[in-house]
Image (cartoon, rainbow, N blue to C red; front, side, top):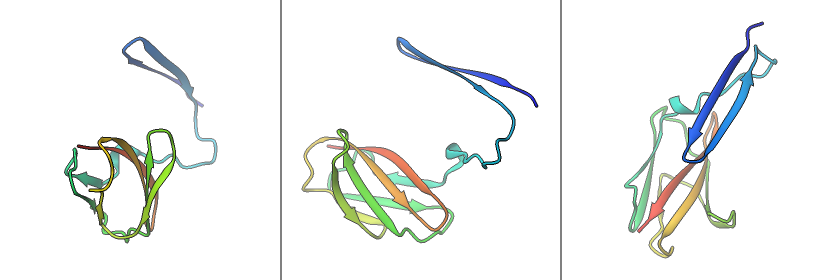
Length: 105
């Protein structure tokens, strides 16, 4: 079993963890995820594109404080009523759940 030490630096903070061999749970590579949000920043309508052609079953938009603001379905969301700010969006499709960040201007 091989171990790998990974270190990440961001401004004044750093994070270190040791990655060991398989623990029986498949890892999900979020960098390879093909879900795209556009335009970002958004003004009125946020479009969601799933390159895997999966059916998007649920979309939840949260404030940066974690409060659920919008619960919707489909690949277009009207966000014109939201104030300016940064939001988190949780997208559930046939194969995965992904959380991404977008900005409303």
